Amino acid sequence: MRCQKLWCPLCYEGLRGRRFTKGHFGYRRGKLQKEERLVVSRHKGQVREGPGGSGPPLARSDWNRRYVHVWSFIADDRYDDGGERLPGTILLCTGEGRVRLWLHNRDEGLSAWLSGETVEAVFGSAEEALGTATVEWRRPKTIHNNSSPPS
Image (cartoon, rainbow, N blue to C red; front, top):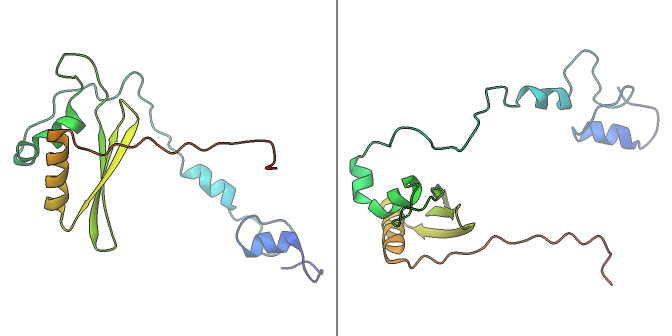
């Protein structure tokens, strides 16, 4: 159903799937609307209290014996001097024919990207860089929200 106007912004919103208004394009009575479907996907489970990662120690395997520095980066919750630290995180992805590894130092808020031809190559680069402390860490870009218009 469409309204009788030649061009209507409410019909346009329905056409684009943004919002469906009664009497305009895309509106269907009795069906779940987009906003209601989003509510269903929200997490309904139990929320844990306290710091994360508190549990039994992680099991050792051939992988973490091969990549000792990468494993300690993501699994150790203490520095060598005994001080507490947040374990780092890694993300592995592919794109444009390369394998990419993102290292995130949560304790200091720094990130680094490494890439290679294969998974073994990129993890080897990460192992070497973390072992020799030659990772090119970068701070996240800050977004400035100026309320005043540019002059």
